[in-house]
Image (tube, rainbow, N blue to C red):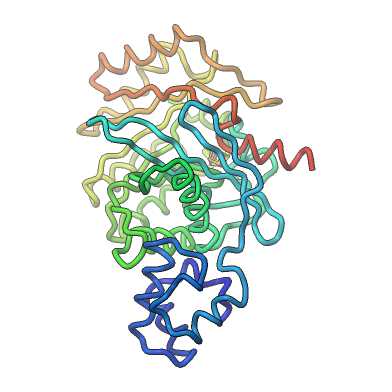
Length: 353
Ligand code: SF4
């Protein structure tokens, strides 16, 4: 057993590992409890495991990644830069908000790739291209680092997870599914599927594949434009997919899972924030029983040539959508001081190293 690869294994895979080491199958469940439910990384504290197994586990660190910087915006956003075993840097974020009932809403935003192949012009993650996919364990290790922040702050465990950090999650489909299986399982981290949101730039075949997996994850689609011409300017992969295909796949996702789909729309000043855009967006979403749109005023990315929208255009855009019956949520600009927009912290660290 290579113990460094334990995190990310399913219960059955853990069973295979412990049996191969000469232990009873039920030991795997105890191991999963320590690893996933208690997020314990010190084998010495796993007191109900056989001594021999604890010794084996202690041969090398269970976590393969380390936190290199933690930046707290002071406005409820903590961003972590994490170094993987091969020196690659990724990011994850903890967001603290008040939920609708006043209880804390604690959301982890996690990465699935180092860099990204999609090359969206408004996003820092795509600037350096795709370095590599993350393994299921590397995806899940981000929760251990965020858990340390929660503990330091005296906060309870996460209420929500968004797969919206670096990378296009559906481009790393198999590893994503294995990580989400462990995250969701009651023998795993136990995060309810309805509290997990997968955010995609819109890969129609993969959206349908996700729908067929039997989970009730929320789906968020990064739309960001209201015509193919405009979308292709912002998101080069749109050439191959096209807006209509993405909207159709999102409708299929809704039909199959009965989960509402949220459309993410980054407002870029002078690019996609006109009244005509608002009208076209409402028309595109008219077949959804209840369309949800997250409006995200853009964080400027150096060198992208794109600018933030004016406060007035954000207000007018959201007013027009609401008037058309769309459920609109304007995302608070947060974390600019900690470079919280996707990929910006990692970009800064890689460029300065
Ligand atoms: S927005 Fe998402 S899909 Fe686009 S480059 Fe950034 S990480 Fe990749």
